[in-house]
Length: 115
Length: 114
Image (cartoon, rainbow over all chains, first blue to last red):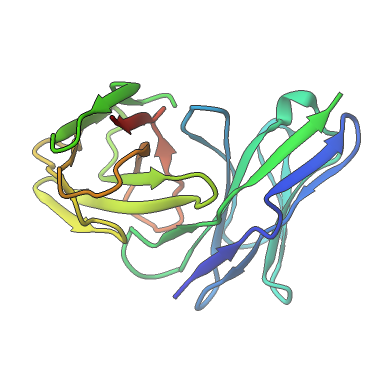
């Protein structure tokens, strides 16, 4: 069975400081990893994904994520946080084979960027 | 949210009633999904469909039903058998070929049982 852990329910960071939202995963084989963002009462928006290749993945709105196979992690990062980055962030993992349903989400991390 | 619409945005249901949530997509995606979101629990898969007239149960299908008569549409019915239906419901779609394709989400429907 595959799983995702987001160990921090809440992350607070000052505007202009770097931010990190943590994600670790468990899956058989090489994983496909995703980050999504959700604003209040809205659907999820895709930020970025790791399939293969370069361990540093760049996505929307200046976000990037680093895949670390030895630590089974896929942390989301941004060099300089904006107040508008405040939202709920979800990490998700999918196994490389199997049915289309096998996308497992973490429980989410609420990011608050303080002005 | 572009390309996937969900209606209504808010829905109130009395105990014992069935209600149907609408999901339509114009992205020409083969696969469609229904998730339930509760605070602190992330998203849980209710049902998914890879092709018209075919669908599969997800992790929490009890008390729900779906249909897929058209490629563009994947309505979800919350039946009276669902014991705790108050939640935020999200519909998603994706290209089926290649399991690495991201899912696109609709804006959601918030269901409240009175």
